[in-house]
Length: 162
Image (cartoon, rainbow, N blue to C red; front, top):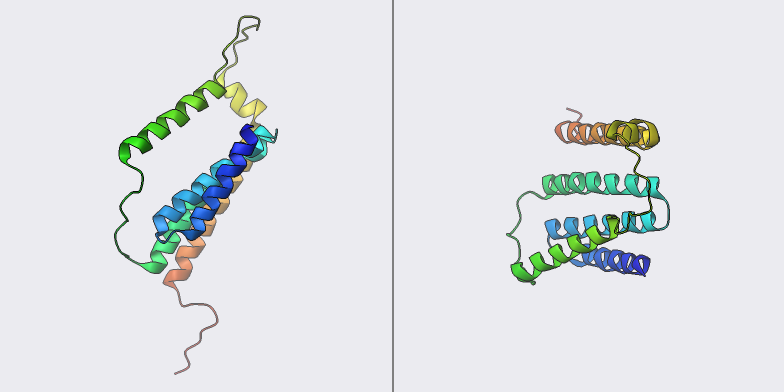
C-alpha cells in the first residue's frame, strides 16, 4: 500500500514539476519526485540505491535551480500560495508523524540490545555507501566548477576572426 502511495506521489509531483510556470516551484516538485523515488526504492529493498537516489536528488535539484536561474536572470515574483500556511504546516506535521511511526520500532520487548557505535555502522557496515557518496559529491563539485568555468569563457565552437 505504501509503495502505491509513493508511486502516486512521484507521478503527481512529476506532472506538477513540468507543468508549473515558476522555476522555484518546479524545482521543489522535482525534489519531491526524487524523494518519492528514493522512498519507493527503499520499500522495494534497494536500500543502497535509495540512499544514492536521495542524495543525488537533493544535490542535483539545487544545482539545476542555480544553473537555470543564472541563465534566466531575475524573473517575476512568486505566485500566491494555493494552500493556506496552516494547512500546509498541518500536512507537513502529519507527514512527520507518519514517518516517525513508520521508522521507530514500536515493540522491542523480545529483542536483545547490542550496543553498536555510530562509527562502526558508518565506516564498517555502510562503507560502500560512504565511498559512493564521496565519489558522487566529488563528481558534482567538478561538474559545477566546469559549468561555472564555461559561463565565464567564450562558448565552444565560436571563433572571432578579426
